[in-house]
View 1: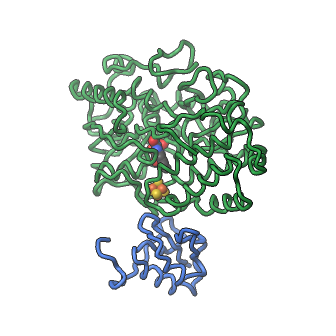
View 2: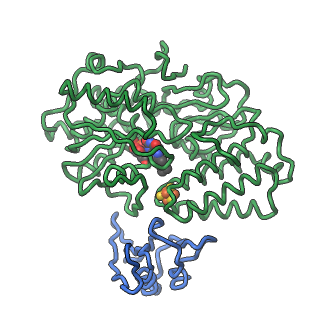
View 3: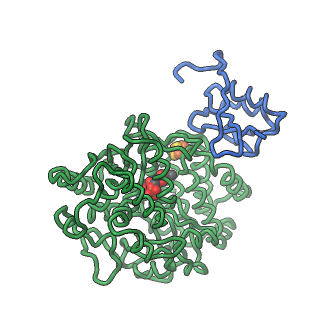
Length: 89
Length: 427
Ligand SMILES: Cc1cc2nc3c(=O)[nH]c(=O)nc-3n(C[C@H](O)[C@H](O)[C@H](O)COP(=O)(O)O)c2cc1C
Ligand code: SF4
């Protein structure tokens, strides 16, 4: 059994907030617009939305990790959407 | 008995770490030469690893992480790495690293040499903040002595990152050494080692390294003979605040907090202790006899943190002092993460309102919500320290908080601060 876990890189995050729109079940914004993840493993039916949120983040601040029994979670690769990538990042 | 930089160690006091000759000749006379097997042969390396593991030594830089586990991770990452000596002592209330580097620089550097031999590192980098020149001169002198005498096996150098609360964080040090940027790095996988280039970096506090130098030479038994079975060894603690004799003491891990404070001679009966530095926790009088050990402190919701105990005297206001610390910590953010950049000043603002007795009706609910939301959301643990401090203040000074909320703050809240800050802090 694997499940996805969302990690947000707070250094990269610039509070665009798209993730909370795409995945309101797991991500809410704080009063300054920065995402808060509930830390629970993601239900399987939300995996597709989570991948979209990760791909659409303009600063690529979201990482999805597969939570397995082992100690090292594997990174799930998500192809970046070129139209949303900002130059210089 | 407390030590200050100008005093000789007192007779009869515990001085395993501080009572050493400062020069290389005296150091060698006391301890013998650096006993590093040639090319760090495998059996010697394994024996030292075993000894460190048996010692149960935990890091003295604030995190309290077992040193042998860190060494295992870095050792497994292959040869050619860097041992980073964290001599930043960014905590304003702490003096122990400065004193240790002035008194026993060779013990600290030896600890790094032993670790370099175990994990076949090829470089040792000592970090001393810019502006702290007395310490830097002593360290430079020690490094030169060791090079001239061909004593150092692995090359030792010193770098000077900017002075700031967060620049002592380990990933910020590694970032500074590699790229000249004193900023923490987000590391989702804390189980893998820090890296400089493609090689692993092992960051240790100066005191941890001094213990390692003694364990490597004399074995783990003398170390374990002190302190508690679960948390062995001695440790350095800076005592400050409302005491007649502030300074650094070496004590057994597990000694009651009040016995440590007694060494600094409190000037009046204390209201509270601040344990673990400005990112630590307040401890109330009913808990003054709690053993100075992580486990025991956890049971009362406190943390050992950095080796610091600040005594809050009866004439001070815990709410106002906490507001100043929070303001200071908020100003020290490295400015990278939203919850830290916006969250800490917001919390500091509310504490300042509370301290002045001008809280609005929603203040407490807002404060508690923000504390919960900020925790754990920075790339480094800087915001977590500030959150711990504030949460403990609301708890320990609950009666004062109520008075301040009612718009009747104590007269003590107008007293000037009894704490030490690198620059003036206004609330
Ligand atoms: C904001 C922040 C500041 C820190 N400053 C220092 C420091 O000045 N000196 C230090 O030894 N550790 C400091 N640390 C802890 C280091 O990141 C690291 O855990 C420590 O140097 C590891 O050494 P140890 O294993 O010997 O304890 C700081 C941590 C944080 C989060
Ligand atoms: S949590 Fe604060 S201090 Fe730490 S990296 Fe982020 S902004 Fe900088």
